[in-house]
Structure formats: C-alpha cells, structure tokens
Amino acid sequence: MTRPIRTSGARPYDVSVTTTTDRPGQRPDGLRGLLRGGAGIAIAMAVMNMSTYGFQVIAARQLGPTEYGAVASLMALLMVLAVVQLGLQATAARRISSTPEHVGQIERTIMATTYRAALVVGAGVLVAAPLVHRVLRLDSVWPAVLIALAAVPLTIQGGQAGILQGERRWVPLGLVYLGVGVPRLAIGTLCIVIAPSETSAMLGVLIGLLVPVAVGWVALRRPREPGEHSPEHAGRAVVRETFHASMALLAFYVLSNIDIIVARTTLDSHDAGLYAGGLILTKATLFLPQFVVVVAFPAMATVRARRTTLLRSLALVLVLGVCTVLGVLALPDLAMIFVGGHEYDEVSSLLWLFAGLGTVLSMLQLLVYSVLARQGTRTAYLIWAAVVVLVTIGALVGSVGGLLVTVILVDVVLLSLLLALSLWRMNRLELAPAAA
Image (tube, rainbow, N blue to C red; front, side):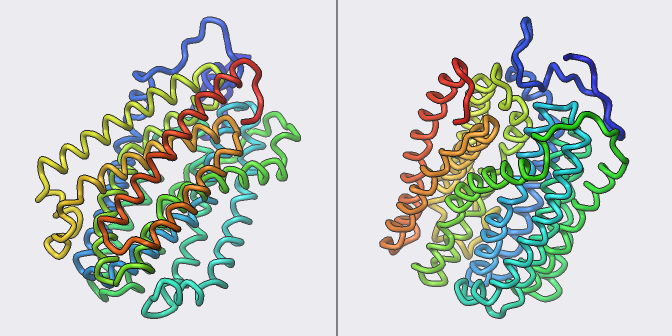
C-alpha cells in the first residue's frame, strides 16, 4: 500500500518510504538522504547541546570542582532516568514508521502509557531521594527531590517526541529539542547566579524541562482521525516494547554515566570534580552527532535499509568524532574554556582522550538504536557485562587518568563486539526475519 496517509495536524507522508516491507525498485535511504533529512534536526540539536553544555560550563565555573561534582552526578542520574523517556520515544517512532496507517491508535496508546510511566518514575525517585542524598554526598535532600520532580516532564517529552519522530515531522520535533536546551541555559544560569548551589542548579533544570513538554503538547493538540486499529498496538504490547527498549537504553546510559559515580565514590572530591569537568567534553562529543541517530532510526526499522543506514551512519559519527579530537589537540586552550577554565588545568593533557571517549560512546549509542529498530533484546546483556567490568576495575584505580583509560578500553572492546554481532544478526534477518 503506497497511498499517502493524512493525519490531522500533520503533513501527509508516504507509506512506501517508511514501511518495513521491501518494494521493487525502491532505493534505500542513502547518506545524502540522511544528511538532507537531518539538516534541520542537526541545527536544533546542535543548539540544544550547546545550550545544555553551556549550562554545565557555567555551573562548573560558578560552583567550582567540589560543588560541580555533585551537580554532574545528579545530571548523570537524570540521564539514567531518561531511559524510560527514550524507550517511549523509540517505541513510538518505530511503530509509526513501520505502520503509519495506525498512527491515531498508536498516539493514543503511547500518550496514555507515557503519563502513567511519568508518574511511576517520579514517585519512585521521590521515595529514593534520601538514598540519593546519602550516596552522592549532597549538601541536602532537596536536589534529589527536584530530580524526582524533573523526571515527570522528562518522561512525558519522550512520548511526544517519538510520535513526531515517527511521522518525520522534523520542524516541531526540532522545536521540542530547542525547548530542552535553551530554557535550561537561561533559567538554570539565572538560578545559579541568584544562589550558587546544587539546589538552585536542579531547580533551573526542573523549570526548563516544562518548556519542551508545552511545545510537544501544542504540536500534538489536534485530534487524530481514528485510522485503522490492531491488537498489535494495544496497551500491553506498547508497554512490553517500551520496557525492552528502556532496559537496553538503561544498560547504555548506565555504562556511559557510571564512571562519574565511580569517580565520586573512589576519588577524592577534588579529583572527582576534575573528572566531571573532563566529562563535559565527553558528553559534548557524544551528543554532537545525535541528530544522526534521530534521523536514521526510522530507516533502520526497515529490512532493506538497516545495514546501509547503520554503516553510513557509523562512518558519519566517526568522522565527526575524529574532527573533534583533532580540534581539541590543535586548540587545547579553547577546549579548556569549554570544560570550565583554569581550575581544571590538571586534566588539560587528557582532554583529547575525553573527546575520544565521547566518540566511542556515540557509536555505541547508534548500535543500540539499531538493535531497537529491529526489536532485538539480547544485546543489552553484553552492555551490562561491560558495566560490571568497568565498576570492578574502576574501583581499583586511584587517579583521573587511570580511570579514563580504563573506561575507554572497556568501551572500545564492547563496541567491537556489538558491531560484529549486529552485522551477523542482520545477515540472518535478511534471510529469515526474526527477533534478534
């Protein structure tokens, strides 16, 4: 079926572009199509990332290594909590991309699941706030309470973004991403300037997260046409897929953020703060090519395009990462400004390694989304194994450089294993489609 499907409030899009069924004469999405489709999203996400990390740089400068180490650990926790948001987004985007004729039913089910998930996540973290306060050695329990409240709009944003991504409505999706970054920079900076503390920083993050939810609500406010219905898109099926996607993403985000927790618990407060400052560059390098994941994900859900899209996307991410590493080596003083200034000079010689770590993580992230696009479930076991190895070895390391090298080696080995496994499974799926 190749007729255009029109949804209320959205431009028509062609099922033949997004269906998982191969069509004779269709050309898979190539690198040129990937770049063209991702241009607007790339700009929006670049602004979002620059704003997000601008906030972290300002926090690092205003609070200093000790206080900023606590803020960085809280932000790492928030990223781990975001796995439910990202699981909802991946589920919505995959389902709408593969079966756009069911978009009305999918949206209703996704949003109902999203609101319930937001309440569960927020309540769970609120109950655990005293434990978070103790483990992360916070000045008070209030930053942990604010993180719990922030988890609610963060989760809601995931369902909204997934619907827009699945429909390939790049303009409103780009506005959602802008709403994530710019308000955090403006409101978060204002809060820190008024009262430089962990609590003020988290209050700014919470208020800022309300903006993208409002943008998503406006983009999806018009009622949908009923469309076709299928038991495949009922509540339980959506919850099940969201759970599997969230678990895979949880494994990745634990892996990509556990090192700051290890640093916080094994290094002294000063060295942990230095490591957190270096991770600003790692996170910037990780999220710089995130637009590639967003735009490539719908294509990776199709049998005919998944291998080509994955390999070309990995190549693009690698090129961007190498350029970043070379830029850091060529302009170390400029890189230090982005990290937080002269208070972090002790890690200046390691900045190119922090950038390299971000590149490895961005390629790992793309591989994880490739697995989700084909509804794979087993790859997460390898990632959890890498987490165990990293925590075990990292606890024995007593320096910033030693911990950084350990993390890079573990991630490189994991990247090699996942890439080989993904290519092998895609070969099998092309011959006989099955769950990986």
